[in-house]
Length: 326
Image (cartoon, rainbow, N blue to C red; front, side):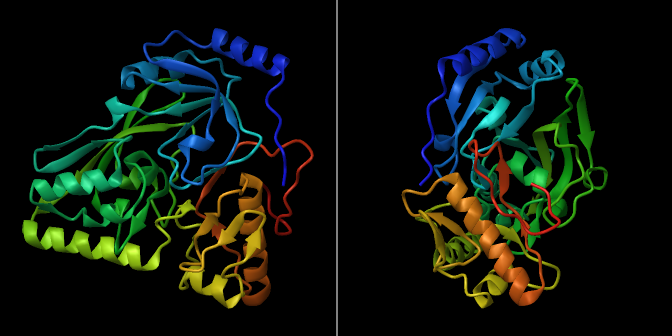
């Protein structure tokens, strides 16, 4: 097991100095912030600073004023995120309550980027609007769904998105259509430096009974096939063209495979599990081991669907598939 030391006094001074360099905001800055409690895996290091903006205007002013040499990234509820044990340098933006609003407007659903997908589906149900039932099967936020064109149970964001709003690194707001966002399978071409703030989604009138039935079917299917009671990060690898990641992993003999406290789920082998004592390094090493075995047995290189952010502990390296970067 890799033991991580607490930041030394000079490191803490550096973090305090970073906050001194950041623009004044109406939201909140937290230095040396634990990120493990913000992810479903419950692992990972700390962020130099976590910023919780008061609203989108506060976020825009922060982005316009933050020094250009300070890295900035955004996280949602951490359902599909692995923060490395060395933590994240710079500022992590966490969208709070003001970004977790949803309403029905002109027959469409308008949702903040911090709103849970499942809650958006529930709002559509109460309004008698259909087309968003698949969101009840995605354990994340609207912002994360926009970033990766998330999907499940026959639907994905590009099918229902009217337009998304984002703020660029200079603090400028942009409205984008699905075509302008370059949405494809679990991917968008929008710069990683842009932060989504809201989305307008299509939802047509439907029968509430049928909508509820569809959502109940999704809930049962998830419970039957996925390790929902475990510390996991959702689907680990994207399905390759014409195939299923779980099937390739199973055929490579990886079901139940362990590295330290990390394990490939016995119930659904495209899920990695923290059995209780895993580190982020355990989980990433396990994922790379799975990818290597799948490549050896099938010739297919699986692509990570889980976002991996941050740095490894000093002196730690993770073997990669030959020819790949980080």
